[in-house]
Every structure is written in C-alpha cells, then in structure tokens.
Image (cartoon, rainbow, N blue to C red; front, side, top):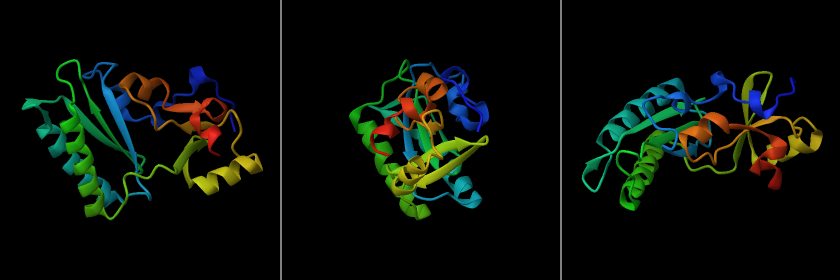
Length: 176
C-alpha cells in the first residue's frame, strides 16, 4: 500500500462530491450516516430522488434551508446545510433524522450504523464491522498510516480536508 501523508490523504475520487461544492460555505454543517450494508444501484437511485425532494423542502422555522444530500460509495448518506443563510434548528434536525429513519425503513437498511468502518487500500474503499476491522488492525493489514473514513466530519471543510485520516490520527484507534 502506498504510504499517504495527511496532506495528500484526500483523494477526490474517495471523497464525497459535497466536500467540493462551491455553492456551500466551508462552514456548512454536515451529518454523515452509515448504512449497515451496501445499497444496490436501484436503492441508491431511490435514495437520491427521495433525498433531493427532502432537501428542497427542508425548512427551519418556515425558512428554506440551503441543503443538499449525497449517497457516497453506496454506504453513506451525507446531508449538508449552509447555515450562513439559515440555520438548522433542533426541530429541523429532528425532521431530518425522522426522514432518514423512514428512508432506511423503505430501503430495508439501518442508516444509523455506527460500528461499520471504512478504510482505503489500493485506491479502493473497503468496509467492515467493528470486529472485522479490529481483526485487520491486529493482523497489521490496517496500520497507523492506513487512510480511514472520518464519519465525524462536521463541516464541508472537514469533509474536504479530514474525510480520510491516517488510522493513527483517527478516532478509530481508540476502539479498534
């Protein structure tokens, strides 16, 4: 595996397109949801269509939010709101969570899977459960320099610059 440094860690093909959307400020708020299994191409198409409708209609205190969503690598649903125009309120965030619960039920997936991890090996993103990931760390297949997906990114800027982090600098090292 090629050794990557933090400065070249962000491979644009392995980074969500929302990270590079100039229509949103770098401070735009981001939420990353992980599916418990890969979505099929048909499920991705359904999710994209449903997410587009939701983000166009999403409001906070009767004010339209500038929002966008993406299905990435058939495993992640990423929501983004540019709060420089209108901030997401507690109620509007609750609406998005409820919406994602319904979308997950419709697709037959759990979009709130917190123990599914991703890493990059040979320019390909791989996914594993926590137990599988821990075993790979124990075997040395995942090392301190292996790029892992940081699902805790909170802004568009973090999505762009910290989506992939070396395992040794990520939150994953504490639980693997």
